[in-house]
Image (cartoon, rainbow, N blue to C red; front, side, top):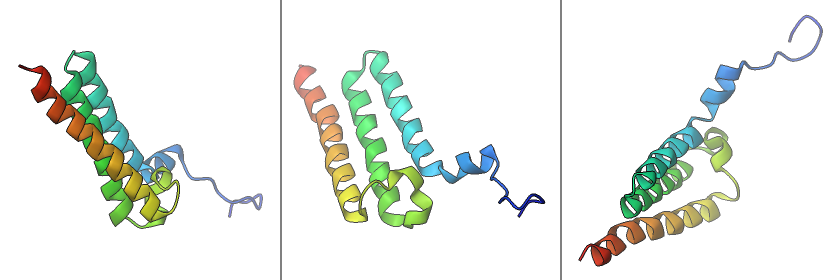
Length: 102
């Protein structure tokens, strides 16, 4: 406790560091968007899907108090939705690319 009887606030760095799971997912998302902007739409979609699958893995294996913003609903619902969306994007990126490359 601080001298004025208010609890000490965490520093900005600690707050950001506590949200490392969503930052890792957002870094993958940013990389995928960069690939899309370079006219590699299907590869970018696959990278976006993999970053969402990373979110599913982090949500599944980390305790709820550590996942931060990734915890939106119950663990099973979050993991299921992240897995379905991530798998759909990876399949879209990898399979559709083969169809349009002929």
